[in-house]
Image (tube, rainbow, N blue to C red):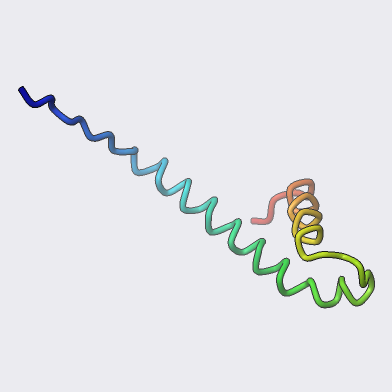
Length: 66
């Protein structure tokens, strides 16, 4: 006897929220990529990974843009 498969569909609002979050994170990443050359010129030993982490921390601590 085959068991019935139940498909869970996320509510539209939840999917839209996830898409919005993903889009915001992509934009933050691209801003970090863009700002890295200037930052590494000031701090030659700075890895991109560290810059990215600092960038996300700074963005997280600052008020959200509208």
